[in-house]
Length: 170
Image (tube, rainbow, N blue to C red):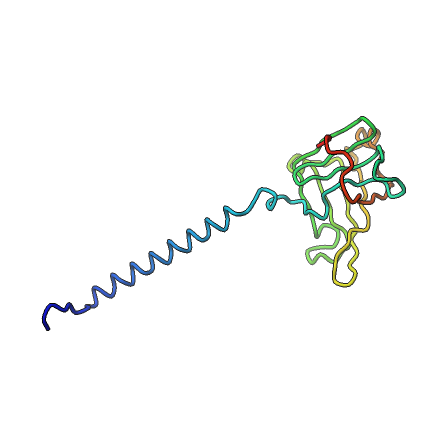
């Protein structure tokens, strides 16, 4: 058998171990690459369909009373009085139970600092397989009395503007 080497059971075991390590390494690299392509925007709890400028339903988008919702914070605006809130979280099953049997989605600010002063509620409607946000409301909690005086947004239905009107307030 001249200089040919026979593959033994030991060589096969070494090959299998080497092959498994290569597969694990490739999968790990793929996972790292896929994760690194995710932007901070993807990690926002606030979906793009909720972000934007919301004004009272009967007003124009240049209204002095508005709620501006961004991916990582929101603003209450009443003329020149502006209040910023962060630490946002969304709840898709708070009103309808664990199976999401509701047309409401809740947005809570200062989530990790309870009790919250308000909840923003989006009312959704599904038409032809697509979900539309028909309106948005602000509901204040008992701890939000001072905020309610500054920003009397409760009992008002809001509509979303096509584009944010003021860029400098965020």
